[in-house]
Image (cartoon, rainbow, N blue to C red; front, side, top):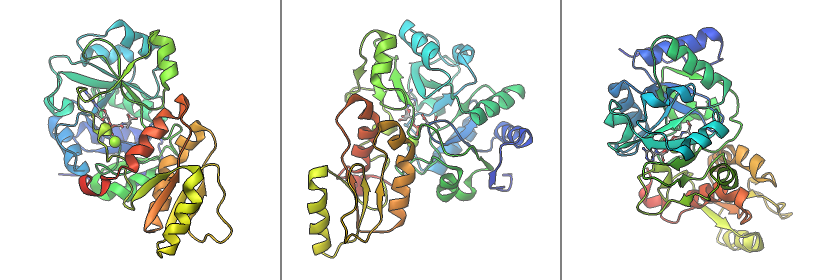
Length: 339
Ligand code: TXA
Ligand code: MG
């Protein structure tokens, strides 16, 4: 039987221990990480992992990341750690990096979506670390966790975002404040030899290159399936459009002429004097911009306008992960193929 939902809980030692027990009992627990909030299940419990897919309405062939307390746990999940992967783990764990490695024999197909690889991450958030430690103390080996949102929706960066999306689907939501990075981990694949950047994220491509001493290739259509790589991911319910700074005012005027109400996520520009809709002027730098991105999108989405216009961001390497999320959030087909 499922435990009753207790809502958002402050992460005291006692609450974290109870969360770990819920996981051991096959329940789902939402917890903070430095990237986004995760929807956690015992990664060794196939039934619990299946519930993640059911709750998120996520297709079964989209693999989950297994979170472990530190790199010494990797051999339980991966049969091989190539030197490049080891170097990245040494440099960036704990932190916003996920490694895709050849999976060890006993890893369940439910977690890996049937692939011969497994995604592993050591999160740095103190509450995630405390939960992993408490879970390990009662025999847990790893926590499978996707972002704690419905499939295709904007990822959560606060406990309130999780509650809004998943309500009573989880036994407990541990509150760890606003996620520091604000966008998902960087995913680097080593399942097929040379490093492949599968998803840009919290660790920039220049930082990866510095450690790997080669620039990782970026994912192409042959890459292993990663749900964050679906064109329509990270979508708002309101249709969103990327607009260059040059065109933003004209675009607003044209839409207002058609009696459309618009919400704007600006970066450099201030609202025109007569503008009445919601206007958020986001941070000028990539780090703080990413930190607030999902909360900003959720706020603008909640305004229920006809469209969200997003001022395009710079074409520089440090903006790669933000550009990736904005492109997906504004993908033209988003209305048709997301859920
Ligand atoms: O920052 C993050 O990574 C957050 C926090 C909670 O850790 N998690 C997250 O999980 O973003 P999720 O499920 O929303 O995205 C994980 C991505 C998906 O695109 C998934 O397909 C990919 O990782 N992935 C996991 N295992 C994989 C594998 N074996 N091969 C290829 N892609 C994999
Ligand atoms: Mg996700």
